[in-house]
Structures are given as C-alpha cells and as structure tokens.
Image (cartoon, rainbow, N blue to C red; front, side, top):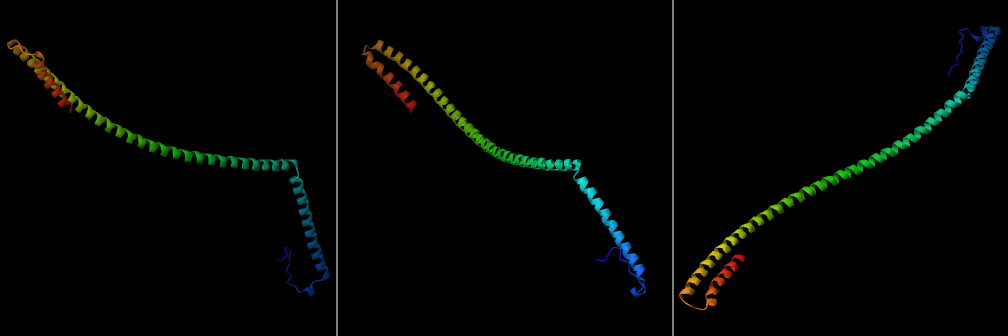
Length: 181
C-alpha cells in the first residue's frame, strides 16, 4: 500500500537540492506528528467518555436489558410449550368426544331398535291377550248355556248332578290349556 502523502517527484533525485528534501521530510513528519497527537487526543476523549458514569449506566442498562430479554425468552418458550401441551390435550379431548358421540349414537340406535322390538312384542302379546279374553268370554257363555241345559236336563231327569257338571268344566279347562299353548 502506498503512503498517503506520497509525492512522486518527476525531477530526478540528483537535481533536487538537499534542502528541499529536508523541508519535505520535516513537513511530512510534522503532519504525521500532528495526526498522531490528534488521534491521541481523540482516543483519550473517547476513553474518558467510555468510562463516564452515563456510559457505565448505559452499559449496565444494556446488560439488564439482555438479562430481562433472556428471561422473557425463557418464559415465552415455557408458555409455548404449555400451549403446545394444551393444544395436544385439546386434540385428544376432541377425539374422545367424537368417539363418545359415535358410541352414544350407536347406543341410541340400538336402544331405538330394542324399543321397537319390545313394542312389537307388546302389541303381539296384547293381541294374544285380547284373543284369550275373547275365548274366555266365549267359553264362559258356552259354560252358562251348558249349565242352563244341564239344569233343564236335571229337572227333566233326576241324575247325579256332579257327573253332569263335569263335562262343561272339562271343556273350559281344555280350551284354556289350548290358548296358553
């Protein structure tokens, strides 16, 4: 790298008087000395400013901000982990709810089917009961008719009344037995 104040002389060195070269050299040394002094003063000024109380307070505040930022980042990471855990639990709960709803729907359908079967069975049993009641009523009427005939027959011919009453009772019992089967 070339010096900053490099002055290329187009005159051969032998033609330059020695005094001019010395003057130039002193000038360059003077300028360099001045620059060193200025840079030194600026460096001292910077050091004084850097060690000032305001600068130290700023450094402390910056360190405190870094610490607070680090703690906030840790709390944020913990909150995010908690949120992810809660989100996973919510997904699990939602899946459980869907499963339970499907199970409940299946149970409802099965219950409705069972109710329909039982209603059909009740209807059938009601019909059978009505038929049996009608048959009992019919047999009761027949029994009364037979009792009247037997009474009429007994008045006409005196026979043993216990023998005459047995056939209607036997018919009634056979009719009821057939209905129950």
